[in-house]
Length: 252
Image (tube, rainbow, N blue to C red; front, side, top):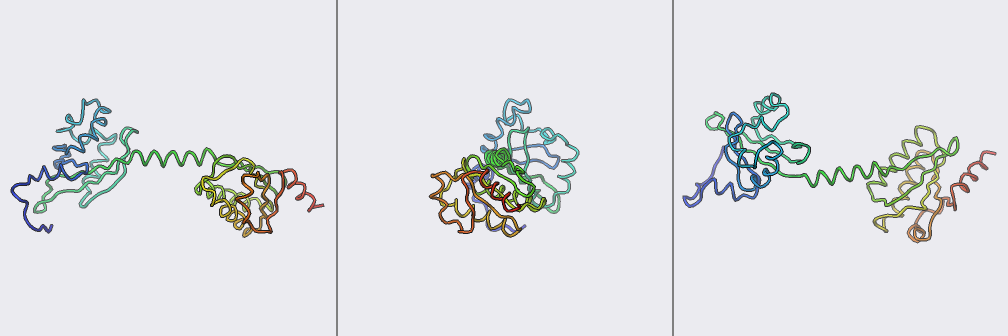
């Protein structure tokens, strides 16, 4: 390890670690926690109580096995660490954190570990909420004729939800040789108005590439002004019924 310069006598190494602004713990070679900085103490206060401790101060001297459901497996992982190891862990299904473990060696002898924790609970919750929203709001695909489907789009659509819609519709149409897709937009609105035409044109173009004609039905006045840029070849009907009547007439 290359080190430049010397630590000034006026600066305590532990004080420097405490001032870095990151959550830092030091553990000995047998995985016992020996020290933590203030930021770690603040983060782990609530975590400690999940394990029956009064606070983070009681973690000092405790073996890290206490915090793992499979201590044997975790010890095998630790024994294999020779360089910085990164992982995302969930503590008691409450706190989600990115953990960075760095072994400390001196003359090839293991001295202990530096452990950094970065709380990402909020981000993980946001990601989970976003994923659940997309799943919960997944659009039902209804077969209304032997070669036609109808999709009632309801609620707010952002780019992610609409991309999920495009993917689902393409898979359905390709798998079942669907020739017509009736998209009911009577109860839809976008979180960004300027994305409406772009999103629908993407759906239309993607369906056209696999041989499926996309038809728009039930366009409300509030949405009509946002969809003026759609290609002229797109058929638009007042209702799914009218669109389906057209499809049936083509097969007579």
